[in-house]
Amino acid sequence: MRVVIQRVNHAQVDIAGKTVGKIGKGFLLLVGIKEGDELPVVKKAADKIAKMRIFEDEDGKTNLSLKDVHGEILSVSQFTLLANTKKGNRPSFVEAMRPPKSKELWEDFNKELEQDGFHVETGEFGADMQVSLENDGPFTIVLDL
Image (cartoon, rainbow, N blue to C red; front, side, top):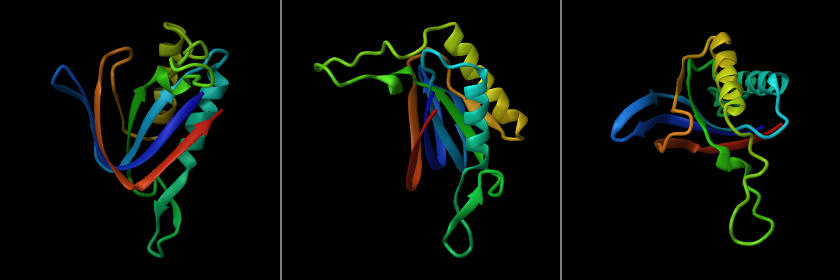
């Protein structure tokens, strides 16, 4: 599983001109599920993200978690995160898990975050989406599990 975590001031996902997910301060999560991933990996990723301290405290140190700043989450499924570009010029996506299992695990991931008390907005699995954001920092982390 690979998750790109972007600390944002705001973010949204549009499909065919309609906003389907929108948040204020929080995390935009781009989520790739790979072949072989199972529920324990998804739970571990959600737990790690829930506890990640990448917001600044009053001293400017990254000591605050998403919960501490009352942040929100926008989760977007993105199989292209698992592209293999080592050979040739056309990325290979053989490491990306295929639906419907990948959709189920992405939904499980989002449920885990909701159970941790976060407001979670999402894109639409498999849709052509336009994602807009204001990256805060910029602060971007790649979580590989």
